[in-house]
Length: 409
Image (tube, rainbow, N blue to C red; front, side, top):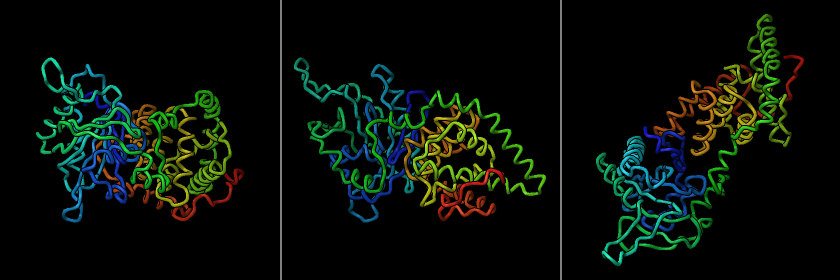
């Protein structure tokens, strides 16, 4: 796919730097959002995407409401970076349309209708050219027109398209398809969708950089961890060999898993994560049994948010394939709770650290093709089974386990 589809997400939302993706909302608030009210729709975009987009094309995929006569429901939202105006409009339109049509095809009802919003401080409101009498709409109107034509070739239809310079209260919006239709944005913070997301504990970030900062490497800490990794790995190997000689390899897996769970609880209580602890955790996560069981935390009532905090901290602290392991755990947890932008950024981080990381590749493929989070829950259920075989119930409160006995390891 062309490189001009950088950063695509959905509302939910999914994203990666080379291919678009998406996520799904629960529709409790979106059901009350009338898609025939452009101002309300645009004001709800930050909540649906997870952050306030800038210089972006946002596309909402629609599905029919369960009750005849009701407004359509927003089923998924994708966000694309808008490249400089000099780039080929046709190439951009083709790439965007291909991604959107793919998501429509995998929608629950095979969606055929979409809406689009251009958010760009460079955009110009349509005006009459006094010389020629024609309406001047700016470059993005041409992009949207080409986008609509490309979609129609795949039997997906652009029902509405609007432009706004920024998603802020009292900003002017205008239609890119209907002459003289325009309006003023209401306060995005008061949007029904925004309020519902905040009440559900879903953060709405002011900028995408807040997401990238979550996984940006801490160079000083990474250097400290690298200096300790070999010795931590050697100790883990020695403990495993000792357990095997005792005829109890599962004892090693169980204690290593308990070490991670204890660290999740410790970090959640406000304890700083040291370089030594990061090295020990990296060694524990190199054990596939331990790592695979931890996917179960993404569906746990008690530990999902706390685990995500640890995965993000480890992503910032670890190098190479260890960084990829932590970022993949973070991505999976974010994916399951509908935070597509964070999932996409975490997956790209994992693949940058280890391009051959099989789980990151699998999840990135799922994200880009529009696979719903519920479809991936069986990975978490498999983790529950692995932990149960080790004598640990991750379905209750996994952080309630006692601190691990390092001498027994």
